[in-house]
Image (cartoon, rainbow, N blue to C red; front, side, top):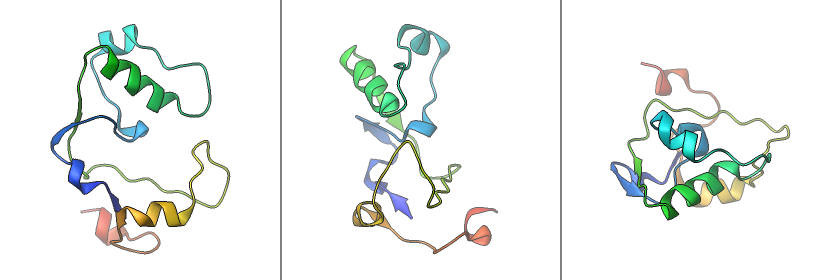
Length: 98
């Protein structure tokens, strides 16, 4: 599934936590909170409040595989599907690996 394609190649208020990348000095000034849920969202909110901007590049070079086990980020399938475009069901190596 592809989520939030409308945010591609533009400045935005938030990106998926595992895709965060920045200069070292920005992350030195703005550390992740000592918690296990929502630390990436809270970090981005602080960075934006401090005047920095978040750029969302593109949907490529990132894959997230979620099983039915416990995650720190809990979300129901219908919530993911509500704002996504489905490209494949299950692992589709030919779709994601070139």
